[in-house]
Length: 398
Image (tube, helix red, strand yellow):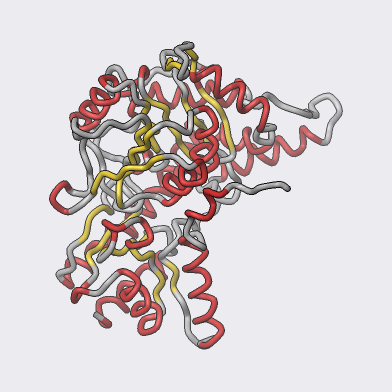
């Protein structure tokens, strides 16, 4: 008999955003006359930058000519994209080597796949509230999971506790779902904790491009010692609107070395390379040429304009919530607004209210963990027209 992975029995029946989509579909079927404004899933709405489209069109043409056609590419990504990313990191003072960079189809995939190179005996430390993928991928492995609480008292930025011993730590800054951002001093404490405990930090920097304050790190590798204890995952989904194009990258430093249970020393960089060359066929050449264009001078200019558009949406949202006296976090260095549900409502109760009364969709904080109960996430990735209309509905309806 072929037995299945019993750990799946410990997962919630449906992924958070699937549950939201189901509720919205039911409401749409019952009320086809209503215009629903979706501010839930963090999907972008602006088109790809012209520089990206031009680069991909050129790459498509290359694939139609024998002399420039390309078949299988390197699983870890082409050198031209490695070099573009390394140059990008250098622009904010962080040095990474080309062969420390691994190109993927997105940070979500790498976040889940990274579990392959770690023992299931590791203790996992996860913030609460948290992006569900961090939790679910470790539940699938049957690992012991402990939580650190994000709450108003710590501005939803939990800090290390020396009484807690963990082997793998998940951090996300700017944070999804709360929009909170760690300072350099705070990250230094996390790096010190990881080094002291021989732990590894999995650092999700998917929203780094939204950071506008130069004192706030856009990479954990801005912290001294981080290359001995951290892996950084990043994505072009929000930086450049690649949610449908799929491209991201992970940085695994050469300095990151850990031992097997029997004491054999292993390079995590080499382990990840071995994993990727075995289980991953690489990102298409056409997509990687588009990604390379993101980091060009013109591509950066165009992507910054895109980010500025979404940040203005966030400002509009924040202004409306401030008028209503609703407490919230985020929205400055992040596309997310994390608000306290008004009138003592629960997260799903507020979701139902917004959907049924105002035809606005957001994400219940409870879906991100127990500490998210009583909170709600709105995203700034909508159109300007819909953002303004949604906030007008909220101003009038609450």
